[in-house]
Length: 284
Image (cartoon, rainbow, N blue to C red; front, top):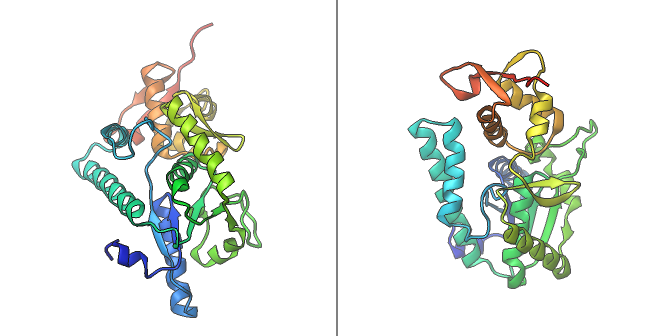
């Protein structure tokens, strides 16, 4: 359905999320609850701006932001279809964000679902910074470290939770008072001034970091005396360290370390993720 102001008025709550997976899980949950229990359907708005990478001291729709994301996708997706899909995702994000900001009313409470993943934290900080002056009523649900189900598992993102189990996490909802909104908005202002090319979650805090911040983790996951396919190394990093970063971010750093000769390509393939690499041991 088109996202016009009248469309928002049909919903008592607007849920903000920062990934397609989270949006899918929540939409599935609300749809099933509405169908089974006449649950008051709640609108889910997806704002996935990939703000953990690239410049942020510019408008959200600035060409610098667009080029950063498209360049990142082009490194591992060279087909015209993949790049067209990335461009479509970017344009969709811009449209959704413009409509959300222009039509949001303080009478519509906003619930923000986020996690410790850098892209999610950045989205959370940035949108709170944007909403602070609107006096909107904001509540938050942050993904806990462990699931709330009987068989507790470590959670990496909202995608680890089945739609049917989302109701258990509604009890974690907390009000975000103006005083906390101000602190978050000020912290995002500081990050904008620093304008690093990368932001990461360190000890629960969102900070600016250097481009090579994740390199030690990647090198540690790489086998010292064996070759490994890039896709396998990416999976090793994700599973071993749970850094909350995407395969694309890891792949970009692998490419950089190949250029700096910390890693060597020993076998190429039609898809860059299938290239086989090895750790380069420098003498001395």
